[in-house]
Amino acid sequence: MCKYLYGIDFGTTNSALSIFDEEKNEIIDTIIVPSILYFPIDQSAAEPLKYVVGEEAIAAYLDDGMQGRFMKSIKRILPRSSFIETRIYHKKFNASDLVTLILKELKTRADRMIGYDCRKAIIGRPVFFDDDSTAKDALAQKRLKTAAENAGFEALRFQFEPIGAAFAYEQTIVEKEKVLVADLGGGTSDFTYLELDPVKVGNKDRKKDIIATGGIYIGGDSFDSAFMWERGTPYFGKNTMYEAGPGKMLKVPVSLFANICSWEQMNFFNGQKVKNDIQTYYHYAKQDKSFKNLITLTDHNLGYSVFQAIEKTKIDLSKQTSSIFKYSKMEIEINEAVSLTDYDSIIAKDISKISRYLDEFLAQHQIKPEEISSLFLTGGTSMVLAVRNLFQLRFPNTPIHTGDNFMSVAKGLAYSGYLFQDAN
Ligand SMILES: Nc1ncnc2c1ncn2[C@@H]1O[C@H](COP(=O)(O)OP(=O)(O)OP(=O)(O)O)[C@@H](O)[C@H]1O
Ligand SMILES: [Mg+2]
Image 1 (tube, rainbow, N blue to C red):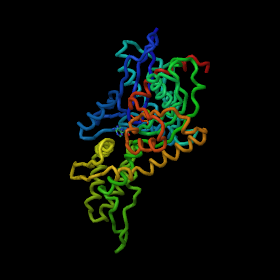
Image 2 (spheres, rainbow, N blue to C red; image 1 turned 90 degrees about the vertical axis):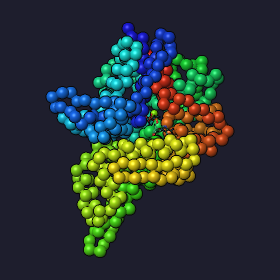
Image 3 (cartoon, protein in one colour; image 1 turned 120 degrees about the vertical axis):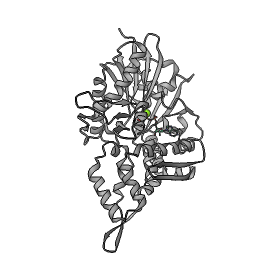
Image 4 (spheres, rainbow, N blue to C red; image 1 turned 180 degrees about the vertical axis):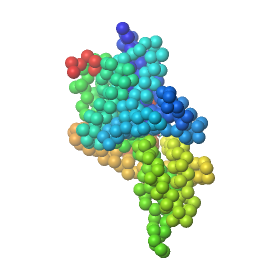
């Protein structure tokens, strides 16, 4: 009988698995894998499809000169009812099939560490997979369940990701607290308000301790998209004029640039029609130099490397007041200073959406700021200064704690074994 249980946080950017020893009642290790898939270009129809996951996927993709199929932010397709399947070379993949590959990788690595085929897992899910459509939400969870089953899990429970984060925080406190947990990730920002008590760790029923949960479909990916839109696309010809008729100059349609600003579009970018349109505009734009960069970007799949530069700028600006947005590849040259003030204004819309949502959340659940004992912020996006400022300004008299931004959800999920003792 396997004495282990896995807590699995399948994230938009990173996925983590915590191995919980149910006899010793402790976590023995946590693994993190970037939620990225890469299918190299040299495939043979006679053999099973070759693919790589995580850090190795990034390295192989860059090594291969960014050819092949590279997929990021796959979690975002889970609630998309319009997404049925995608063909990758000779094989078709539905949403669950893609997620299975990531969950399988985590399971294989963890099984190897414990020497068992562990089939018991608590899987995290955001409070909302998508904003307010319950049908899409149910679809996303169903797809995630199928993916987990196909990855080899039999005993499965779901837990809200921010509740996972809260249980990880509970391990560090010494007395009862009412805590507002904010888990700010790549895809979503999730909130939970609950009562934590160190003496309740491991209790069978924690349901009544959870006072409110909520979330919004905005995270670090949205910041990167906003940055690409504001600071990236001008280098790819967003302001290019073309000759629409004799003597009639118009700006190229902005819709051409939506594809290069979001990962959902880029993962399944069906190039040919868009590529033809781009060529036509290029012709009528009299071979505009920056518009040519758009052709280079789409022809050579440079999207990921541009987003790496964008993320680097964001990460710099979470610890300093200025950075350089720098990119140099195939005659695309970007070298632009970005101050923290610039960055704050680029993401201002998203920050105010998070802020407004937070106000609604507090009002809807009648939570008074003065009754909150402390805040616990986690997730990679909690490192963005504008996000921290938002919480500091909103709760000036409440202690704000942070934990391991990338592991706390998986750890807390592993501490949620009580879910297996519930009747339903
Ligand atoms: N130092 C940093 N400063 C700012 N942002 C960061 C930093 N490090 C990582 N990020 C951002 O954090 C996000 C990833 O965070 P995290 O791993 O918590 O998300 P996730 O769990 O994969 O996503 P989700 O929970 O929404 O599904 C990315 O958008 C990444 O760019
Ligand atoms: Mg997360």
